[in-house]
Length: 139
Image 1: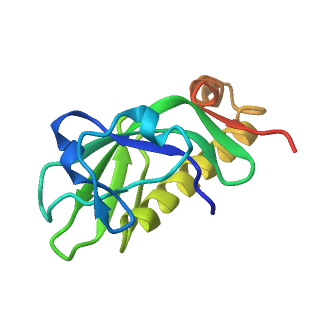
Image 2 (image 1 turned 60 degrees about the vertical axis):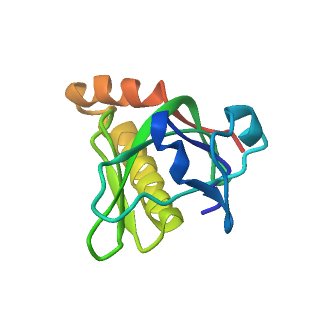
C-alpha cells in the first residue's frame, strides 16, 4: 500500500520523528504538506507517542479529518499503532509496516460496516461515524 498521508507527531514527543535516516526536531505541519510520510521511533517500552495522520491512503482512500494514533514499541522492538476513535490497531517490525497494517485494518472495517449497514440498523451509526473520517476516492 502506498501511504501518502501526512504524519505529524504531537506534543513533546516530536523529538522522535525522522524522515529517512536524518533526525528532525520541532518541524511544523507545513513542512510535511507535500505528503511525505515520516517515521516515528519511540524508545522500547516507552509511553505511547501520539501522532496525527491525514490525507491520501493508497490509491483510493483518504482520511479527511486528522486521526490521532498512538505508536508504541514492545520489548522485542515490534511497533504497535492504535487509536481511541475506532478501537483498531496494526503492528509490524517497522513503523511503516505497523502503519500500513493499521490503515489496512481501518479500510477493511469501513468496507465491512458499509455492507453491514445495509441490513443491520445497529451498524449504520458506526459506519456513518467512520465516514466522517475515512472515504473512498472515486476512480
